[in-house]
Length: 113
Length: 110
Image (tube, rainbow over all chains, first blue to last red; front, side, top):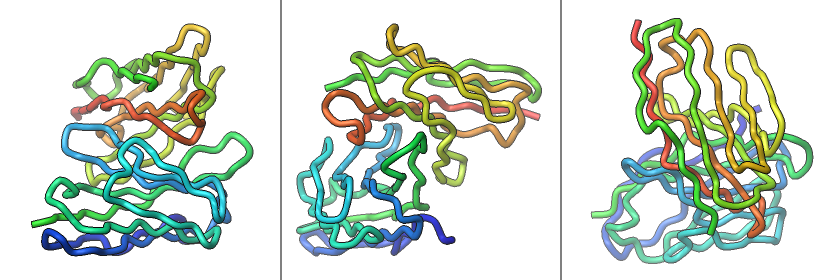
């Protein structure tokens, strides 16, 4: 049981490049989310999904796309990287029923130069 | 949107001391979670507690939804409790659209 797996752990991009941050969970969780964390701030929601085929925007969605074709995977795409997207990105998942909180991945540290 | 305020922003304790962290929110919620981020950056869920009281070992949490606050109690603190504690809430706009507070940094000295 690996939990929530994020890849890569570190990435450096040039301004204008695109890339996909991968997130996979093996717990059959319905809900998945992407957050970014900037120094001195709490986490801010980028996009989330309540099931395969269903996604919605969070607080800071601009510049990011997501899709949820399977229950297990929830990739985050940066369309054209900007220095303002330098951040630590966290993926999280949880069961859709019951009284369970989110399980987080270990994060991806992204630097855009 | 919903606003979340955590207090105090920083706290320094000696090992063995107790502490109370407070989370105030501006609207009714149907999802409230407490998290601990350790010094290595890993986020761990402590409680899912939109209402009521829960306990897990030395930690307990109480949410009074009608008064729009939640409290996290840490008893007999240990150095491993150091890190940042976050409260996150989801409300009428969508229970999974969690809004995080800015966090409370706890340092426990030996």
